[in-house]
Length: 311
Image 1 (cartoon, rainbow, N blue to C red):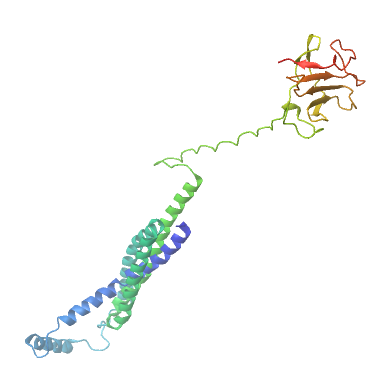
Image 2 (cartoon, rainbow, N blue to C red):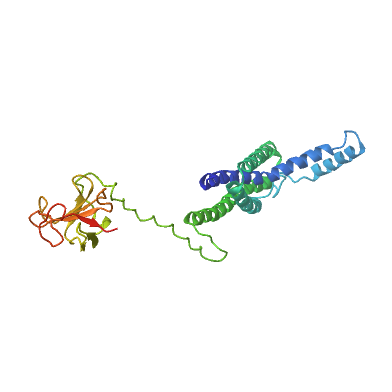
């Protein structure tokens, strides 16, 4: 479950448990009253007569109205001492209970948290009922002590719950940041995620050319030198000049390299795709007049200007 919801539930539950803790004196008093009522002797019996005599003696010895103390409790300092005592007890139990409940609700399964909520809420409700029901039977000092229980329990529950909540929040933040925190050390370094692989350039070549006339990336092609053989058997090498730029041939079957600004076939080298006549492809070189050149570098016929690409 989310830490925020867990802490909100545990805070509410801590207050409920604090109320329950503060109600312990009331429950104990109720149990004591019940035990005393069960142990009362039947009217007319010997113990009853003795109690009547003892009661009469107590009435005779009771202090007159205006005396320093009465059965209702002492004065201001007595009340303050009772409240302080109750506050200290409630604070101590509340801190422990608040811390425990916060840890349980934040980490235990849902059904365990639900059981704790129901149990503590029921205990608190029962304690409040008994406190209200027996309120008139308490002395003033007992009432002040119960009040101290309530206040101390609520304050202690908040303090304990907040302390554990801070620890849990820090742990969650550390887990979100990544890394394992060894005892007494800094978080272990987290291995960086592998970088995305470099993009793969699309493959171009015979049978895989873009549309005719499409400019091509020179980095995807080779400028040579290209080993070629003339129809007469002469061998030579053709190297594409650095300033020539490539594009797909107009018939879509090869690459045309041409000097920027040239038109027609001027200053152009064509590298054709393989054909039946040229199984590895062919090369044709044109001068600045757009004329195809032979192996001697002079304008030649169609047959003399087609060079086989060597296997």
